Image 1 (cartoon, rainbow, N blue to C red):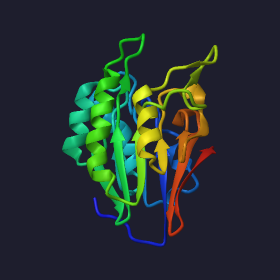
Image 2 (cartoon, rainbow, N blue to C red):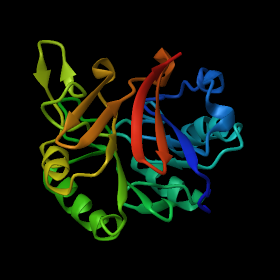
Image 3 (tube, rainbow, N blue to C red):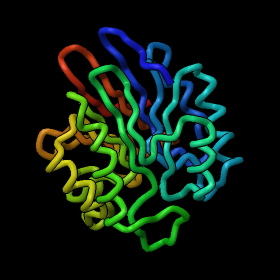
Length: 226
């Protein structure tokens, strides 16, 4: 997809869609957005057919879309997104000549045996590989379905933190500007790991989304609700 060159860009970030994208068209900033980012979980244990139904809704905006699998998407969704030319998982893309975005989808292992789970060691390797390209850019955005561990974005009931240690360690070392994440619906929040702004917009069906802003002063991200 071509970059959009302008003084300011706004990208809409959504995730944890789980087959329900009905609220997407109500996002007020959509008309002026440069594109859409999906952090993961297009479906609810669905395959390519279910993912396509969700993507058709998002494509109705006429905006460029980058998407990746979450743990609730079957592995075939990853292949389908690649065939569509929109897959962000394990890939680095250029948003502007100064800004790279890179993604790691699916999730670390859960107690629920969901369709797309991988060990922390896989994330360590994927992040390292992506950073070889992304790290050449002065501004960087990580899109990780897993939230980093020990933040406001990975807390479940009982105040337990269930995020990824690999994502956390990467943020501490590489220090990207922004990390957009998801996975933990109840942990809709904004936090920081060092200099990195971390945003978990929660589930789209509950009205959660985020704005990624790119302008001459740098990168910022903010949590929004419908």
